[in-house]
Each structure stands twice: as C-alpha cells, then as structure tokens.
Length: 449
Image 1 (spheres, helix red, strand yellow):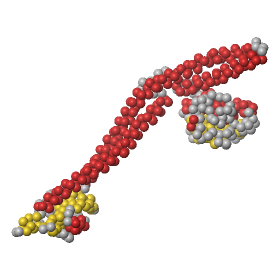
Image 2 (tube, one colour):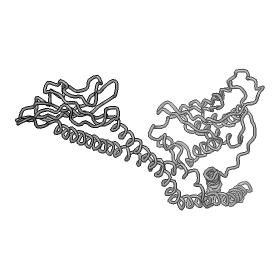
Image 3 (spheres, helix red, strand yellow):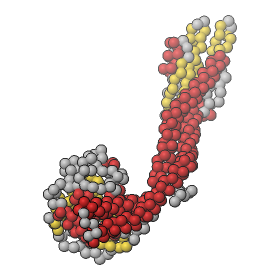
Image 4 (spheres, helix red, strand yellow):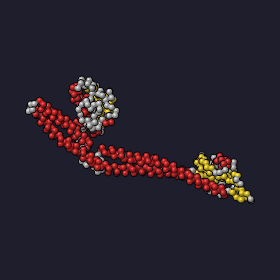
C-alpha cells in the first residue's frame, strides 16, 4: 500500500522528526557560534564610534576654550557648550590641571562628576584619556578628558561626557534583533526540514509500504500450501503408506519443517500487520490476572519437561483492563517460553503482577545466563539471537519483536533488565482500566515443579 501523501508511516515519522530536529539544531548551533561574535563586533563598533564622536566634540570645545589675551592665550570661562545633561547629550567641564572645576556651563552636579582621577592622569601624561564613571543619580557615563596646553605646558583640562544609556539601548535593540532573526531562522529551518524530509522520504516510505504489503500478502498466501503439505505428510504417516524406515524419517522431516515454516510465516504476518498498523485488536474487557494465571498453567507443562520451576505470584487483586486478550496472551506466552527455553536445568521462572496507578506491570524473571549489555539494544531486532542463547533453542528471533509490537499496539511498552550470570527480567507495562467493586483476592502462591 503506497504511503499517504499527507503523512508518513509510523517508522518514518520518527526518523522525519529526528531529521527536522537535527536541521533546526544545526542552524541553532551555527547561530549560537556566530551570533555572539556578530553582536560583540557590532557592539564594539558602536562603542568605538561613540568614543570617537565624544573625543572630537571635546577636542573642538577645548579649542574654543582658548582665546587671545594680549600676546599669550588665556582661558575663556564662558566657552560655548552643547545642551545640558538632562537632554542626554554631551556635557563639558573646564578643569585646572589638578582637577578643580573652573567652569561648569552645563551645571553637572552628579556625585562623581567630573572624574578627577582621569583629569590628573591626563595632566600627568600630557594627552587625552577615556574613562567610564557610574553615578547613582544618572547611571553610567563615558568621559574623555582633553588637555589644553600653552607653550607645551598643560594649563587646563576639558572633560567631556556622555550618558551611556543611548548606547546601552542600541545594544539591547541589536540583541533583540539578533534573537528575533535567530528564532525566525530556526523556525524557517524546521519548516524547510518538514518539506524537504517529506519529499525525500516519500519514495522510501512508498517502497517500504510496498515491501511490507508484499510480506503480509506472501505470508498469508503461504499458509494454505504449507498446511496442505503438512497435512498430506501426516496422513502418509498415519495410514502407514510409507513402509521404509528411512522414507518415514524423510516424511517426518517434511512434517517438522513445514510446521517450522508455518510458525515463521505466522510470525512474519503478525509483524507485517503490526508495522502497517493493520492488526485488528479485539477490544474487550477481561481479567488480566486470570489471563496471566492461565498462561502460566499452560507453560507449566513445558517448564516441567525442561526441569524448570515456574512460580506465579497471583496475590494481586483481580485487574480488569480493555484490550485484546488473545494478543496479550500471545505476548505473555512468548516471554514465558523464552524464560523457560533459555533457562538452566533446575532453574526458576517467576511471574509477578504489580499495579502502579493507571498501569499494570507483568514481570517475567528467569535464572538463565543473562544478556550482555552490548546485546540489549539489539534484543528486539528481528531475527537477532544473542550469542549466549542462539545455540540453546531453535527459533527465528522474532518473538520479542512481536511481543513488543503487541505491547505498543496497546499503548504499552516492554522493558528488559538483565545481568550476565544472574538472569533476566522482562516487564510488560500496560495501561489499565479497573472496574469499581473489584475485591482483593486472598493472598496465595502457586508453584509448579
């Protein structure tokens, strides 16, 4: 069945989400790498431009402070000044070389202004210096102290200043602009990722859907001829039509192999339906505790044949849930069969049912060889069989994939915990719907040798 044009099949939807997230993350990382650099560079340019403007204005006013006085130049205490400090423009203060105020046309009276330390430094060095000063009343100011010389000697200082509030505001505007552009770019990258990944994955999804449909159809069609072959071979054996012992062994091999193939075909059909989301779940209300008990009774005979003790702790209350009892029984039997098959002779399989709020957890623990940590991530891969267990039993490596698929189809999950040399615990976690009036059953434990 071809993929829908509006959405992708579930396996590819997850891949698409990861790709979209990757695109957005890459763009975000690039912005985080280059954004601060751009901000710092542009902010530095703003500061440099502001400093240069202040320096030129101060030097110009310093030139206006010198007037002819006879043969020599003197200081004009009424030099031209720009608007006052309240207008957030530059202000100027005329100082003596030791930092005393000679003229303050802008009426600057804030604590800390003028910067006397900067004035003394400029007088000592003989050239203008920049400084930054913080005032409680008006915030931060950037200052430039220009020297006024006569015959090479510093005779006065002119300190110009400007509030940094405008520069700070410009920096904030720049930061907000970069954040807005960055956020918009990430959103556009994600939107573009949606379009690109959908178009790129559509033919892959269509091919996958076609392959999945083929597996389902082939599995369905193979069941009938396999059943006919097995039935005919069994009839030959039952009627005694084959007399030669070697020929009877060959016919028995046919029976065994067709049974093996029939199980494989059935498993493939289940997986294909799970992949396609086409498995029809018969939603009924049933007693999950009773279902677990019945499954344990069914597996008790197999466990006894393999000299494994199966213990079912059914002290949990009767739990009623909505779901497909047959499919959940299939998943539970897979877990029980694995726990028995991969156990050691004289080993133990323990089944517990525990309710946790709106969830119920069915744990199947064994005392088998355990599963290596590096194999756990591949445990639910199809046709994968662990190194330590592949030789112990015959199987296809599809059981755990089917069990997990059934759990997911019921909005549940299948977890595993394992320790090499100790054993493994598979936990089937399912959502539970309980009915009012359920009563606790008397605590009891049943042990099957």
